[in-house]
Length: 149
Image 1 (cartoon, rainbow, N blue to C red):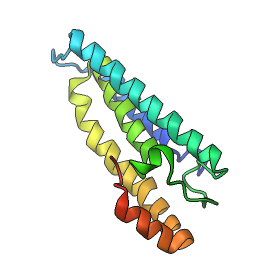
Image 2 (image 1 turned 30 degrees about the vertical axis):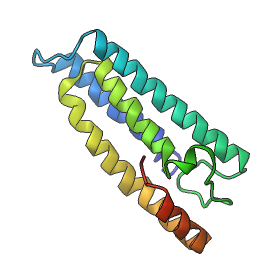
Image 3 (image 1 turned 90 degrees about the vertical axis):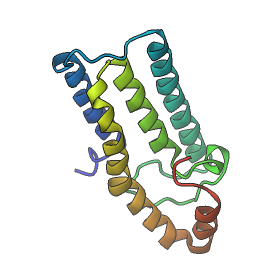
Image 4 (image 1 turned 120 degrees about the vertical axis):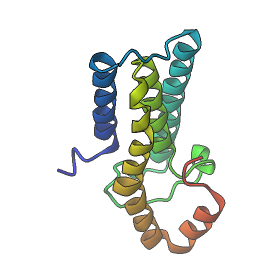
């Protein structure tokens, strides 16, 4: 079960819900336009970029990127200077961009729900592991770097 309880699976699930809503239950609501297409591309591209930059930092520090595993190093460099959770922030940007791309207006409500799921399922347990593993280092990092952005 832990192998499928990872953020990309949740992102795919929420994206599928948005696509279904946009395809079959649009209720004649639309945000389509030139700016919407551009904004969706920027959000998706920005989310992918954030995720790639974060994974590069994990690899550079030779620690796990898997949410349910205990890390061997606490990453505070690169994009992690700006956000404690750039991969999750990237996932949220990707979802928002896909919702705009699918023109699934009613699915915009899924964005805060997705944030809530990420915090409860992944972020809070990860922070507890980091707190137990790295104690004072994590406390300093937590004070100087915001959870999201």
